[in-house]
Image (cartoon, rainbow, N blue to C red; front, side, top):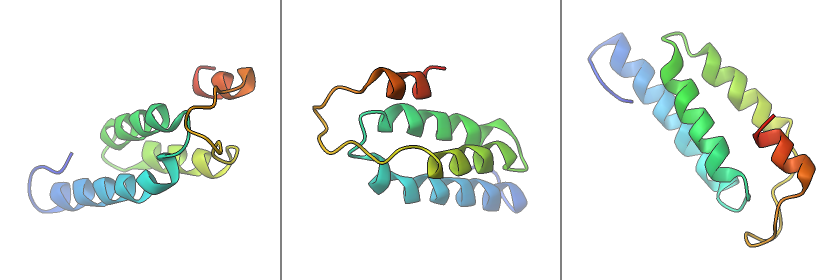
Length: 83
């Protein structure tokens, strides 16, 4: 993700930092790994970062994390991950 030099390197570093900021909030979510994978794909999708910005905004509008990691997700939560 962090590659190149100059502007390319700066964008990569910014995207990488944005992903790392999400780890704590996603670690206890049953769908955390799937969301993180989407974020990673979005970070690599375009040079401008609009796809990553869209995915980050979507995270803010999702439900609260599940209280227990071993708790099974509801059907609605599964639909959010796999529409």
